[in-house]
Amino acid sequence: MNAPVTSFDAVSVSVLPPVARFNLRIAPADLATVSKAFGLTLPTKIGQGEQNGDRAAYCIGPDEWLLHAAEADQQAIVAAFNAVREKTPHSLVVISDRELTISVTGPAALDLLSVACPLDLSRMANGSAKRTVFDYAQVVLIRDGEDAFRIEVWRSFFPHVHGLLEIAARELAIGL
Amino acid sequence: MLLIHCPYCDDTLPELEFSYAGEAHIARPADPSKLSDEEWRDFLFIRTNVKGVHAERWRHINGCGRFFNALRDTVSDRFLTTYKAGEARPDTTTLEAAE
Image 1: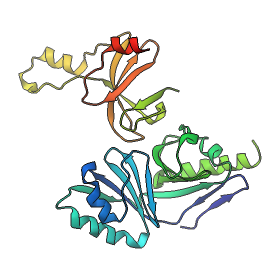
Image 2: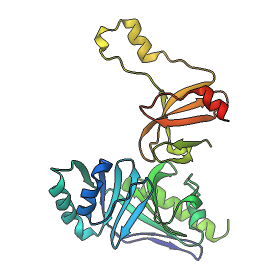
Image 3: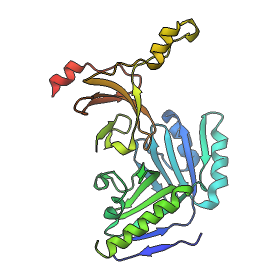
Image 4: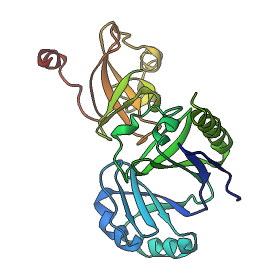
């Protein structure tokens, strides 16, 4: 997909290239086994994230994780999890095509997101992720840095969420 | 906007992330076919509808996805406490004394 970019000094909104995404449900006691299969220690507290190269894992529920990897690694990861399924029951669902990632960066990123996100974003730690709402659309919000965020949104909600961000970014840029 | 504490996320989050799910601590009868029509009606439809402290279920649907229970005052709309599903209802008198 050609990434539409709205870029201003204060904030820029762009669509990131596709990545492999997985939704993992597993009993927390079995985490060590799948951490080895994925090659990254999965975080245990809701909201926490863990990153190593292009692999990332975010804990978004008591027994639910969102995994990211390079698109080319998708089949290998599915195979690695299949190999341990017999001993550690889990569900790994490939959701790469279900969602699109929007990147919001710049000094006014917090202002832009607070247009439609009810969370107190200043309390969110760098590297953490949260499932939340963005104007009634369910999204996963990931904070990469002080003023760098990613929004993972379902395809069907994308035009709405991205449109809102574009309008709000323009309003912020002209100082409304 | 109400702020609700999710016992699973251990965080206080805006009401928009949650959805209400009715009165808490209503156990489904083990053998519904043994119940009379009146008892079944009571199970399905009759609720306490208290004025005051109410035990109710909430779901953190736009978050961790879990159901949990809360004690809320239906007059002031204030949440006294929230606790995980399956736990017993906390004693209201000790909660009020703690404040």
